[in-house]
Length: 307
Ligand SMILES: [Zn+2]
Image 1 (cartoon, rainbow, N blue to C red):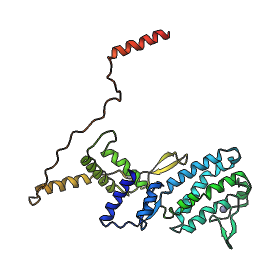
Image 2 (image 1 turned 180 degrees about the vertical axis):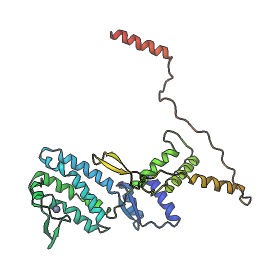
Image 3 (image 1 turned 45 degrees about the horizontal axis):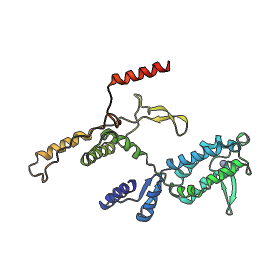
Image 4 (image 1 turned 120 degrees about the vertical axis):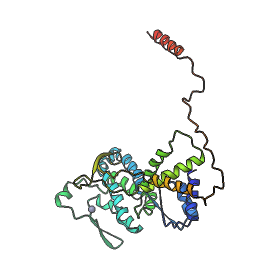
């Protein structure tokens, strides 16, 4: 169903002449296949967050093995390095791969090396002697380094990285998903027309509230809140944005009224009467509920037997 919905939505936009150059998705294999087979002129990018999440999981699993414990303190640096490789390669796929793979040198304390007859070096400033001595570098022949090499050079991951060089995110889609809950609650059933209207309202709401500026204090300082990030397992400062506005509703009502007063507009089809909402059942029991007093008596007798 996801693939069908995706294809219909994409075709709808293309038929209406929307020029789509890049499209960002998660790693769904069926969507990837569809993009490759039917929309090869559109560049498909992957959201680094989804890729990073699965890499982190694999790193944690590997580092839980006794012989790989030394990987544990490196996990956050490794995932950060992935974000950095994508966000700084500006669409250059080869550069992104080079940056990512440089991790395998840096983590052994090597910051300058030769590869394919060219000298390469890390992008950070050279470490001080003290830093070089204190850091827990990995040994080339250690099981931890071998395990890490397997993960870093994994051919599926390297393929994913080629689709992450524009550093595009699907975050605003997740925001939209929370906006639509306000208009179409999940526990209720809506008719097709109603669902369509509710989605349209959610889209208007979402689009009208995109890119809100960060809120400021009275003396003009940007506002933040402290939040615990489950992903990075640490406290982080998150920006607080200006509140949403719902003024689009006033515009909408005004335009509906104006159209209603316009005598040149004739309704060609009768307006469908809304069908009554179907509410969910109060419980999922397949048999009718007995009298409560009977249930209480039964519970009491069970209690007495236990005594
Ligand atoms: Zn380095």
